[in-house]
Length: 355
Image 1 (cartoon, rainbow, N blue to C red):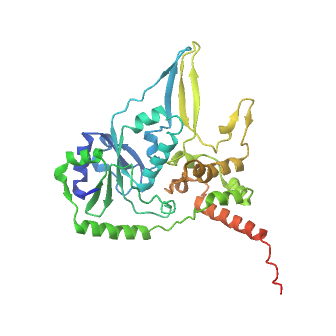
Image 2: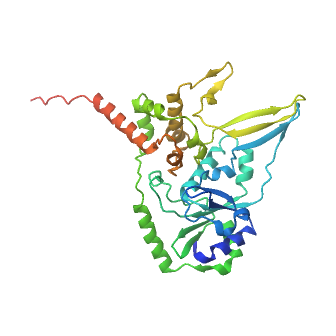
Image 3: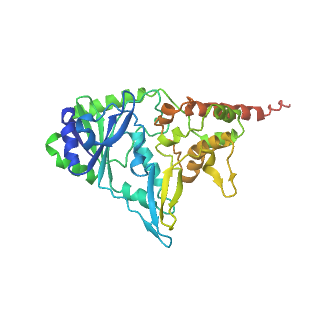
């Protein structure tokens, strides 16, 4: 893999060069504490927030938007709506969010690939950006603090310059268009990057033991911990809206008196009571505790069974937005302790030795 060096002062010129090839989306400050992705053409290249640790909404909004029209119909036929989208570039995507895109890619590819998701997704390129974790990051526990795929370019911030990895032809095209700004990486670049990575690894303070978590969930199915969480949780769905990998959606048909209309898809959450409402007004998970348990079982149990890995990437967004202050890492620890107590109470004392 080719590695190059880009001076920090040249980043603005590089992004402006990228804009001539693809519409660039960058993280910008929404206020003093929050960030969001938005078009660089609106914000300006100088507005890029290199200190952004997590945007309010993850990159999934570009491929799986909060609301979209899928079909129009006239009473006798459905007419697919094709998203109108130009090639675009997401700059500043952290490793955990790149892992989140890989998970949604997998989800929307199963059985029948999702048409509108992949129309958008196939137009995207990624420039990843390294980050320094805060107290809400636990991506090291989910093994998503680094990524080896998906991105086209990846940059590690070394202060006055970026060590840049070129992974794909699309990435090479972006570099080639601004070739004068890049220089071959040096031994000092690599040495400084390794030092930075050591410092980054040591900065992770929130750690979660996720090994054998599906089995822990099985052993803790009736744990009082679920009731404690249910009594605190508002089931507002904020954690699902900001999660990079939550993919629950609802479908709604809007029609007029002549039978014309369109089918709308919009984000929802399995936390919502109406999520499992069916004909006859029956609700499969009417109790809050059951809905909460279902969401965590899906992310850390069901997804493991289906795809071989959990769907949580450890980005910390759910910790940042929860109005009840629920910490999923603490939840996992409590469930593990409850399972250990149950196993301990089931153990029989060893029989005394006989002559």
